[in-house]
Amino acid sequence: MAKVRIYQLARELGMESAELMELLDTMGVEYKSHASTLDAETAEAVKEIVREQRGLEEQRKAEEARKALPHRAPVVAVMGHVDHGKTTLLDYLRKTRVAEREAGGITQHIGAFDVHVGDKRIVFIDTPGHEAFTTIRERGARAADIAIIMVAADDGVMPQTREAIAHAKAAGIPMIFAINKIDLPQANVDRVMQDLMREGFVPEAYGGDAIVVPISAKTGQGVDELLEMLLLVAELEDLRADPEAEPKGVIIESKLDKRAGVLATILVQEGTLRIGDHVVAGEVWGRIRAMMNADGVRLEEAGPSTAVQVLGFSELPTAGDVLEWVPDEAAAKEISEERKEERKRREEEEAERRRVRSMADLLR
Ligand code: GDP
Ligand code: MG
Image 1 (cartoon, rainbow, N blue to C red):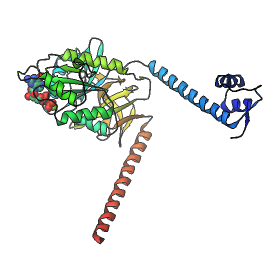
Image 2 (image 1 turned 30 degrees about the horizontal axis):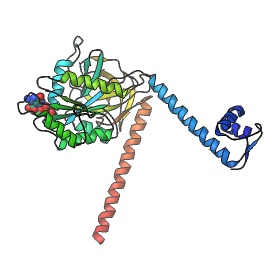
Image 3 (image 1 turned 30 degrees about the vertical axis):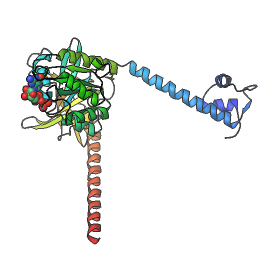
Image 4 (image 1 turned 90 degrees about the vertical axis):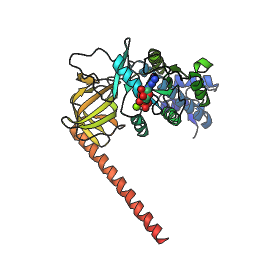
C-alpha cells in the first residue's frame, strides 16, 4: 500500500478525521494536520486496530442483545449404562412432578415432558431408549442443554457410562452425575466417586467441581437435590431464546398412528411455533394443524423450550432433524423436493463409485 493522507484514510474507513487523529495520538504517531501523510506501514497498523475494535464492538453488541432476551427453561437428557435407572427416574418424575393437569388432559407419552420446581420449569427428554439423544447429536443438532449421567451405586462406571460422558462432552453440555440406587444395601457411593475420579471428574465432596448427587429413583430420595442442581447449572448457563425469532427446533420423535396419521414431537428451541405454520424437517414438510403437550393439552402456540406433538406432516420426519419455519406451502414443497433430489444424486454417485471399485477389483 502506498502513502495515504489522514483524511483519505479516514474516509476509506468511514470515520471522521478527528476520530482517526485521536487514534493516531494513542498510537504515538506524529502528524501536523489531517492532510499529513502516513506511511504504508502505519496506515496498515491503523486499519488493523480499527478492524479489531469493530469486531469487539460487534461482539459486545451481540452479547448485549442476547442479554436482553428472556430466559428459557433448560432441556435435560438422562443418559447412562443400561439398567442404571434412567427409565425409573423419568417415571418417578412424571408421576410425582408434572404440574396440575388442566381439565381433560391425560398424560401422553410424546418424547419429552415438563417438570415444575417452584415457578421454574425443566424439560426432560424422554424418548424410548437413550439412542434418540445420540442420533440427534450425530445429526448435528443440539437438543439438550444439560446431561444427567446416571451411575448405579451397586455397579459403578461401566462402558455405556463412558459413552454417555463422551456424548455430553462432544455436545459441549454440562453434566450432573446422579449416583442411583442408594436405597440398596450393597450401594457404595464412595466407590462410584472413585470411579468418577478415574474418569477425570473430581466430585465437590472431594474438593473438585464435578456435581454428584446420590439418589434413589425408586424411593425419590435425593431427587429434589438433583432438580435443584439442574436449576443451578441452568442459571449458570444463562439460557435464553427469542420468542419473536423465526421458529426453529428439532424433531424428538415421530410415529405413524393408525387413526391420526403422522405424529411428530418437536422441541421448539427458538421463536414461537403456531397453528397454520409451514415447516420443513429434513426431506419432509408439513403445515401445523394441531399441537398438544405431554399433559394432553391442546396448544395454539409453542414458545422456546416447549415440546409439542404435532399433526400436519406429510411423511414421517426423522428424529434429530432440524425443524425450520418456511413462509408458505410452495417454499416447503420446493425445499423438501430439493433435499430429496440431492439425496438421490448422492446415492447414485455412491452406487457408481461402488460399481467402479468392484470392477477394478475384478481386473486386479
Ligand atoms: P435403565 O435401563 O437405565 O432405563 O434402567 P431402569 O430404570 O429400567 O432400571 C433397571 C432396574 O433397576 C429396574 O429393575 C429398576 O426397578 C431398578 N432400579 C432403578 N432405580 C432404582 C433405585 O433407585 N433403587 C432400586 N433398588 N432399584 C432401582
Ligand atoms: Mg430404560
